[in-house]
Image (cartoon, rainbow, N blue to C red; front, side):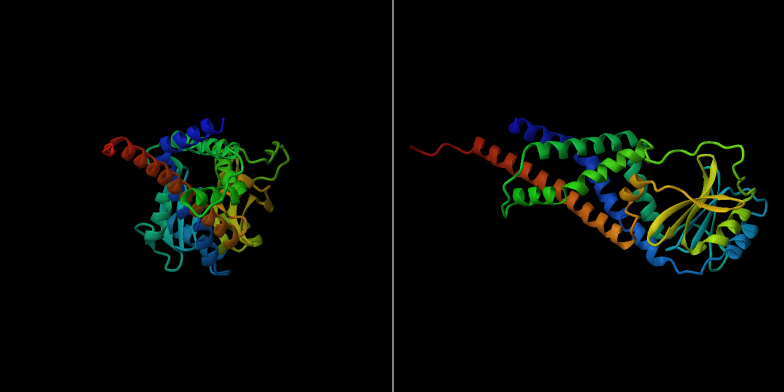
Length: 305
């Protein structure tokens, strides 16, 4: 069976090589984002009063229902539903024509990682599923013999990081399926009401938290939710007029995005992304070298008797 496992392992990797290369390369780029955000946060630099003033200046009609803050860009983006509104520089208070090169790079990498820029999320999910099958076939081939060769390094990388290599695509599929391992709260007629306006919600969040650590504030699953960076972890809190309430951790997302332990989890994802790219490259190199050798043997002329 080992020979058949090897063939299936090889041909699955070849069939999905291009989408996997795009997903892994963009995953490496996105691995740096939690670290960039955490290191850019300067406590006390963004207050609730400042955000309210910016909302009053750039959204006087109060149409905005969400906002997102990029700490590394120092920009606040207002939004109404799925439509992005003005982008404001939090230092100067002036509207920006667009995000920085860094923000554009990360945004493009995220869209490529999730949809390949072609609205092809189904292909990303198929490639991620194929990656799990490829990993399973590698395990079924049994414990390898390590050697200082390309094949040996390929096997050493795969087996030394096996748990992380499994968890990365597995958590990606769980996110795509909407699995969080947290129970959805039951609706209660006595549940506290959410703030009526975005400015009021900002005031409530600012009472309990430092808004310099804000990631976004928006409606989610029928309630108003704020995402903050606290202790290196991206946390979620429900926002009501009475204050903020911590929500259960969404471990598949925290693990997949590497934002549960600040620079440490971001560094883990960087190492993992480099290793998975290395597995794809070395696997393709092994196949190409064997193919070229086999072809050379076929066309080599017979030696004279």
